[in-house]
Length: 468
Image 1 (tube, rainbow, N blue to C red):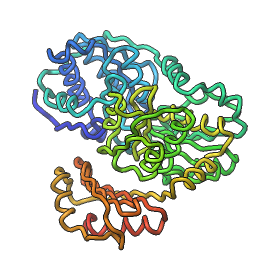
Image 2 (image 1 turned 180 degrees about the vertical axis):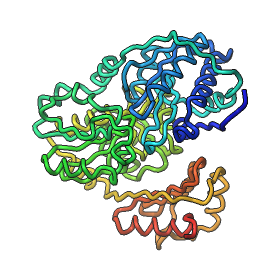
Image 3 (image 1 turned 45 degrees about the horizontal axis):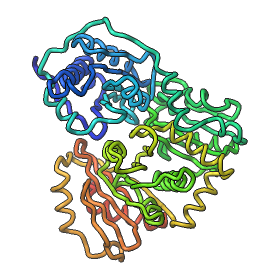
Image 4 (image 1 turned 135 degrees about the vertical axis):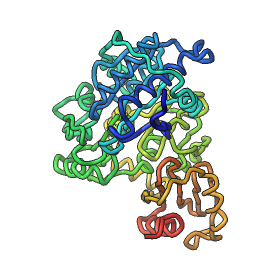
């Protein structure tokens, strides 16, 4: 078969622009490669041949998923196509429930023109060794196809799983103020209505819109203006937003203030340690902040930073070496469930956190801030003239031109696991991280004031942003 397009899996799956690269032909190529990986002699003993296939609300996602099911059936595997739109974490759950490999058609938070494929196994995203193996067998065989596959409703199974993670009954009994949920037109729509009293739920952007209302379905502050306004208008306890495939969450407090993940994660950690009595190592992506490390130290627990991509921290959860995991893009997981981020589970945990303690999010955050310090985090992405495929070489160059001090502060530590993270004596930090697959430079900073964070970002701009 003539190769028509290079296909590369990134941090969390393969994503591409529909009708240009993400085509039915290329989807069939990827599906056949996944089938070949499953059928490989080295994997046949550990994989059952079951494949569960899901899809989000994007344009033609259901049709792409159907093509994947046809290819799996044509390869004499045992595909089950979800009969309805499901969040990505539901497919991760079903990989364990059905002892299957999961294939999810989604581009997560990317712009509407994109679609993508995520591969799941044993309740989480597969690691690079699997995606590399899939890439290696692309076009080894012409895609086989058969229409004789099964379709099954799996929604109730996932709802039962959500109930098992956070019991909604006590929340229902103690919930006195509205909760605003911004579904961002995504795959989570309707799920919280099955778990909480609808009279207390105010939902926005719940209908299907493949254009996502003109924004990217990413739960970050610039995209949540309507959520913030609705929280203020309804005097809600909290506002939560789920991304396009519902594995990530954004939080707005009772005052209408957006909380960055550098605030959300410490709130989750302290609640799990103090109220749930979870004990063990805490891990996070290198692009998260310093408060989590301070909390770990206060409780005498191990702490480690890992490369960006939830699959890295998920591996620590899956192997039992960590008990709580988080990432800067709004994904969190903890001991007792899947080693997978899940926006709906996290939303329920926040509601439990507030109702069980009879506190608002702003009150909980104030307590964290008082004990562990302030957090002012910001991220800026810069377009580059070309991609930087070799992160290590980029980092080495940057290290050579670093000054001895950063804005007058001593440099305490450098972390070079995913770009370059510079940490000062005050724990303030600056991370410069090239995408690797896109002509994009991601720059992150956190300090104890907006002013200081802005100054750190301006300094990084001089080093990494292209001349205008």
